[in-house]
Image (cartoon, rainbow, N blue to C red; front, top):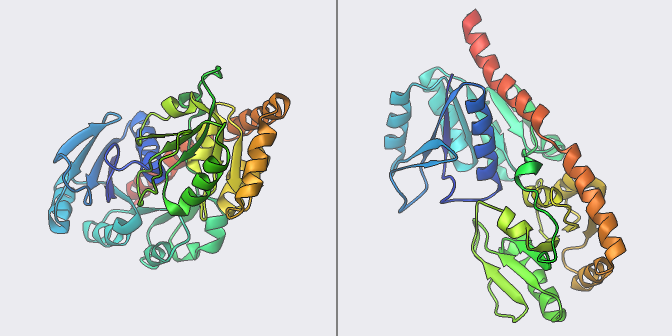
Length: 326
């Protein structure tokens, strides 16, 4: 089958959780023998074509140009998400092929996409599926963002000293992070710039700021504790990635993080820096840290994506079987 991903942008030029999920899903299809291409329509000032993870991507300046390229490519299925998804459903109907939409949150856009009645809607968590009108799609399923733990796992060494946050966007808890770092001058912190959102930057002697990266192992090998003080988090892929290295996670009590982490994180209010400071100091105790690290590894093993990625491939291949029976 030929599967076209109709998306706003893609790695490495746009690099956040949903883009990472797209890469993993596309790779699973390729490994199953299918052909995949990315059609990007909101990646300004980037190459006209590029390859990432062995997958070709093309950039189209205008919507008509993108639609024309997709038509010429002759896809069997269109997969889309975010702001491109509603239009992709319309395009799929004009092409006479099935539409698949990935829903990464519970915001108004996800509901608008569902009102287009896609052939398959995929929610990224049980709680998001419960919140959204999934019944509007012709079929639906839950597929949590897949993370291959072995691709993120890093050995624990004395170099792993940092207390880390990924994405200095305000909604990801940037202000709380800076308050905590300022109050703990003897602790080392690492701040990774995010793939989206206005980054809140400060200058503190105990904070190292680093650029966004598609190789998170470079981050995990430095990290002793991960902070996820997000105001909203529909799942928490970064936190799941950290678990694979046995990194204890301190997280906001959001529905998504509670579903993904379960008992592998300590949950804290996102507007109470004093509680985060106390939690970090608790993890200074090697025994406490070791227990938290073991819980992280156990949860990482539970989240192995093998079965979910098989369900994903099966769901796409179902469209081929359906067509064969018509």
